[in-house]
Picture 1 (cartoon, one colour):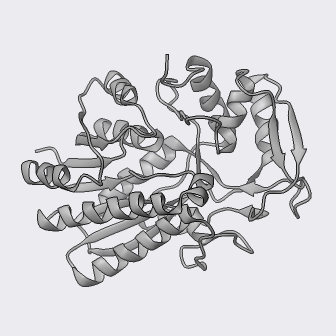
Picture 2 (tube, one colour; picture 1 turned 45 degrees about the vertical axis):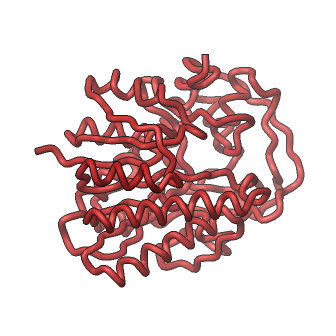
Length: 339
């Protein structure tokens, strides 16, 4: 019998790519998503790409009654938990909303799991739990100091899962700390579709390239890096989705609380991204250097050695692949999933 995976937030950017991988690996998938920052069309396209069906249930994790009903009616082997608000700037403006939505929703999910004896969960954490690191590469045991409400929700939830596993030794909770997911499925059918002006570099670059935005603003060119611009670890979303498959394979072994970085282990500067994108696509990206943003670190990239050793996972796609696939998606879908 196929293993049944519940994916919260499965209509989003990372979620939809992971659902595609799950279907291709032979899992049965149920997705719940409130569609506040995602589109049901992404799942329709996943079905087209795989020739398989996804059970989609519009649901908010804060709707505890509906969530408990779902768990009582269906049996899940594992949960992959993406659902949550994710904009750093918005979290600074609306901290209570982020704490209620991200932490409150996850607590409801954990209660439903415990009530129905579901013992495996993969949580989408983030490199934001490291805050503004003084040095890279970052290991899983590097110091944790989130510096904004969004990052703190990820950090607090990691601690909640740690405490839960200590109290319930049969639970197996795997925290995957993502670095900077970019790219899209090579088909160009699913990809990143931010609402409003993008908060992240790659979708901003692609929207400049497609003519939706006039230029890219680069915040600071006087960092102690090779070209003066900030350095980050960018990872192709398809590599990230594969990481979740490897984490699922970990279930069935020794239970408990585990943490893994998912990154390439290499840092790319903002200008390196721009130049690679221009070289791969042939499209010029006009940009303007502005002042540094408060709190931005000079460099932040992963040490993914633990994931390679224990999960048998490593990133396979390079920066050119990321740029090419992101541009392919944006060209084919200039307005994202909207008509």
